[in-house]
Image (tube, rainbow, N blue to C red; front, side, top):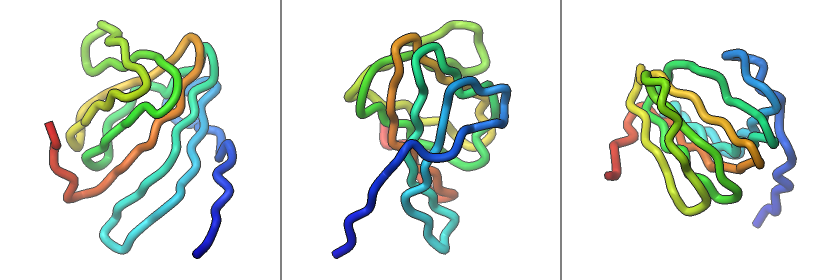
Length: 111
């Protein structure tokens, strides 16, 4: 058994992000990454393309997501969004949120 301290992670500097960080907690040989995204109050994980299919599962707080449109769709604890590879997207929060992010080449849309 190994207990892992999951801290705040590294600040996300790409995509014109503001007050966002990522902490990778697992990686596999099959190009799978599992991590924690933290978006601070008034933070944004900037507009970018998904390099592989991604599941973004909010485990704390609330915020918004958007795809190629300008419409911001509310999201909160207990909800998830799935982005296909190449899909443009952005996430943000006025009050802060934490999400588990799973990225994998072979990840299939669960919805």
